[in-house]
Amino acid sequence: MRISNVRSFLLSYPFPEPVRLPFHGGERTIVKRDAMLIRIQVDNGLIGYGPGPGSEKAQRAIETTIAPFLEGRVLADPDALRVQFFDHHADRELRKVYSALETAMYDIMGKVHGVPMSEFLGGRVRDRIRLYSSAGMYMPPEGYAAEAAAMKSLGFTAYKMRPGGGPDQDLEAVRRIRQAVGPDFDLMVDAHTWWRMGDRSYTPEIVDQMAKDLAGLDVFWLEEPLPPDDHEAYLKLTEKNYLPIAGGEHEPSEDRYLDLIHTHAVEYVQMDVCC
Image (cartoon, rainbow, N blue to C red; front, side, top):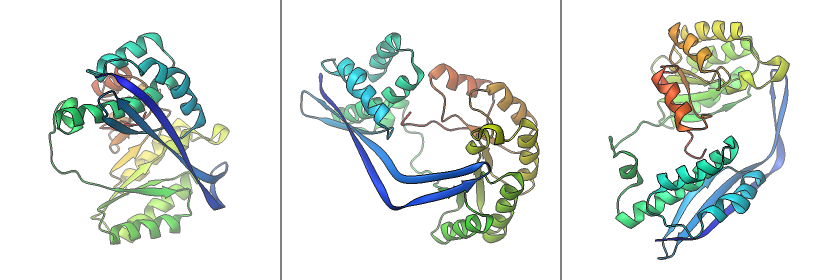
């Protein structure tokens, strides 16, 4: 079974009006939402699909480097193909794009053998998973509270928000959410913005204090409050045991991901399947 065709479709939805999201240090303007669909076909006619990074740069990488590598190769073991590709390409961002195509290859393998993809990744260990609503970005405190209440009314039992309005406003937002949803509803804080604002980024001291304060508001986990490459900083924060720390979606390789796990730098590991 050889790979005969690799294609990537870049998709975009322009908004009727730009969405402006103020945060602590500036304003994020969103004019469209992008996505990518990966399509891989093998010579017996089977087709596998996967999600890809929604960028022109990623699409160029697929067309010029990844597709030429894959087309014509035997698809029997996606892991082996990845090892071969990584042996020749050390670039971190290129490897992340390759991972999206690996998802499509596993889709094909599942169809060949008539089993779920999970069987190729160690076997299924559960039949049900709990879902949480993931929304809330760069809003005033009352906006987060209203949205969390709306998610609860839809039947969700947890809500994840993305603050970035400054430490005081972030805490006020979490307080209002807790008031709106009550004590029996889980709340996660995705703080990836905190280290992305240049000279307005939250300092380690601010992050430490925020973790303490959020623990008092019964936050289920604090996600990516520090730059993702600094595993040592994550370990130090986790060891203070204020509240559970989560992270992992920016890890570029198995070794880095395993380091995050084996050192217990975080308590919840979050792999980005697309990257």
